[in-house]
Image (tube, rainbow, N blue to C red; front, side, top):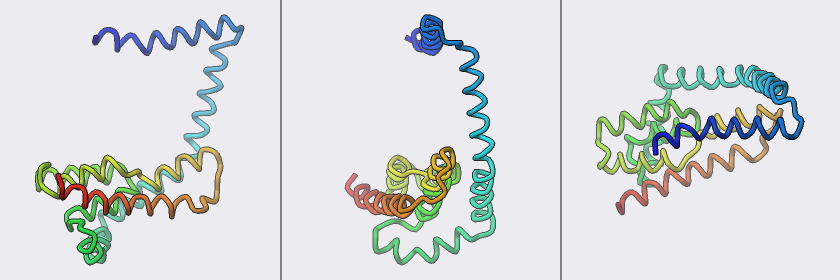
Length: 171
């Protein structure tokens, strides 16, 4: 089975090249053009991604994350979200690596079978890094105004946080 899975990608590449040659397409030239377009997209996205990473780092290192979680404690108690999960809920829409770090800390400190661990696991599996996704996808096609996308996505994230806490209490 392992040999089959390691042969799939080369087989697909060979089939694509053969199909292109059969159709009379200059395959290598098309490949190079795709690489050029991909590099241009990456260069165009780099400033926004750099700002996003810097913002998350500043949020964590400055202590602002603690201030935000302290302000959200009353809301968390109303919705059933444990205080220990709040940093994950705050970082989840912003940064995948930041939320993964918080998730790992929750599992390490409280355990995967704790209520907090179960809620954090559900949050990690059911939320999106909203700002990252909007930055990358909208930035790659040149959309400047996101309209209702960000508010709707953040509402979906908040719904996921509350439903995570509710459903984990039954597990």
